[in-house]
Image (cartoon, rainbow, N blue to C red; front, side, top):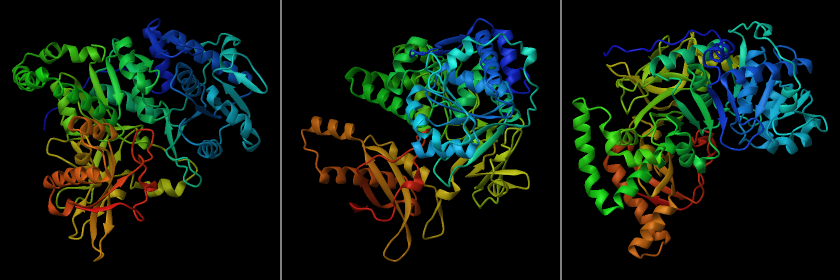
Length: 576
């Protein structure tokens, strides 16, 4: 087993401690910046601390007592960050809410979280005004966008501007083991599950992850994932602030490439879908160019061989035009939220991009394992972070069992749900619900979610995610979902629901001068499935498939909400 090299990082006890230390160390350096027009578009590290002190002082004047729960909802922006850091610095409890939830889900989270203060962007003002009568516990409403107080709603900027200077020494003492944050992973009525994290959880995860991957004050992060999600919040917001990097909030997903160029970002955090699309576009642009399609493949092989013997950085020079498309400064692509396709990881690395993936859950603040820049496996979730223990519970003959974890980053429990909390722990070990195995080099490999596993008719375990990855590599498949279905003999067979990629079919139609019909779509998808089946053992092969008209409903990190998918009464059935 290779000895893990770790970076030396500063010691912090809490997020409050981190903010103060970073403000003193990095002072006038840019900390957060909005690329869209907002009331507070940019702050340096010292200004960030100043705004936090002023906003916290204003909240105290409004009568907000320590340990009060404060909800925040809105787009990624500087003011979201100020709100979050104010709550943690003034000993409040922050409740980040997913801005993409429907009204019922948002109201339910506000209710379940016991929030008494809410800070929001203007697109939620009307809804909150209409629902004020139902939110009995809510006492204070604060708008990020309103320039002044109006009809019972306070202005965040006015509160900050009218607040007196507060000394850092006046900040309350933080018990870093206390509840600091409640993150709801599901918002629908009766399903709300609030993960409770402490400042110790967050601080320990920040120190551990940066000891594994070097982040510096020269790095510039482009933030594209929703900041309420723990992956983006810890890794794409708190982590850069901890190490003195700057965070730049993208205007939208459509402007990512342009924003990368403008910021000259060095680090981009994304979900696998983002990198899959990126790689497919690169691959397509090369294959459609007569000259590049002949030159690039041998260049990839040659530069890989030369870099292996020590000529580092050659790929960046050879594929400079491609790197310039993304701003020319990208140092690391980091994938999280789900497992990326190993072929995409390898493919991007062949063009000179560093690509790493990690694994974790909201309940673990979130990172448990991480690949390193010089110690990685594209098909693995990474090595356990320092201070984190991983074990495989009840492994089968292949070494696959449920992944259990222990460490200072593991949550306090689920808010107001002792039964769910006790069910999630086994003798002090957190049960992740994921199935996986550890290899001889100490890398964790995730096979799939325990609840998604299909038991085939011959008793073999089938993990849907593995087959979905193969299907999704086809340009004609936009997304897919594998599930178990009973056949006429009541045996469990493997079935697939597939959303086709309209763009790929239109291109095929135009190039071949063929009309797109149902029969054409069925036959081409049938061929895709037959090709995938060739790569699979008999018990994993797809026996039936269904073409869907609509995309699957997804979470913030673009995971399909499997529990919402109807796998019973489906039309347009096809045998394969």
